[in-house]
Amino acid sequence: MFRCTAIAHVVLGLVFTLKASALDPDAIQHGHADSSGVKIHYVHAGAGPLLIMVHGFPDYWYSWRDQIPELAKTFHVVAIDQRGYNKSGQPAGVEQYRMEKLVGDVAAVIGHLGSQKATIVGHDWGGMVAWSFAMSHPDRTERLVILNLPHPRGLLRELRENPQQVKNSQYARNFQQPGAAKFLSADGIAAWVKEPEARAAYVEAFQRSSFESMLNYYKANYPRAPYQETAAVRRRITCPTLVIHGLADSALLDGALSGTWRWIDNELTLVTIPGAGHFVHRDKPQQVTKAIVGWLKTH
Image 1 (cartoon, rainbow, N blue to C red):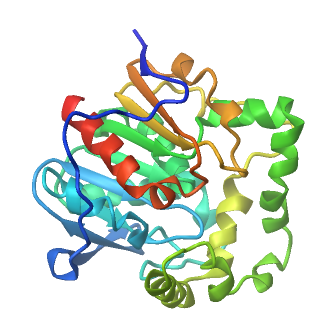
Image 2: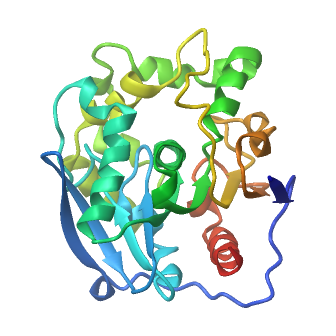
């Protein structure tokens, strides 16, 4: 049933030309969906089949600013602020950030927009939400696009068997310590943003955000020793899937990609990008946009 249509160190050579498009503030609209009492802010643009974009840590909807204009030519593109971030609700308590709550937020946005299903695109924690959504709501997942978040089973395997991944995941264990949020600042966690104007926007968004909420993602969901698989992560992915991974990611090592095809009952396309780090869509925005747009044209 499964096919891996592109694998290893691949950069898609597409037959069409794609020029960078700046995000026009007048071309996007803002909205809010209710997820069991938690407000989920989103921006949206374009018309057509629904495509939901889910950011990771530390980030917000603006992460997708280079991808939204191109995708909006074909899709109704919706980029959310995950709970705890920017203009979305910030409920108190670790339990409010369990994966089923985060998956529920995506489902709430889809329902709010009057759709039955969507293509889900996720990066980092948004990637984990996207994997989990596709596993728990296969009937509502048209296609799946994952950026720099290996399949949960691959990550668990590496945390069990790869000492380097265990070592490189120490930051996640540090984030789970009591009082860890007091060591975060809006300027500090926006330091990864390269463009000065964009960095200023990030600082403003993070000043509206909850650092406790951000770290609750780790406290509620990050794998813990002995890193055993649960029934939830063994559920099959049934939709076409595109995985894009920047090979210079030091937080999530590429060894976790091995075997991804064993857990997907549909076509898998794996694109690895040398020289790109964890924020692959920001390090190589045109390359990633080409890969996503080209893949969606044929799947």
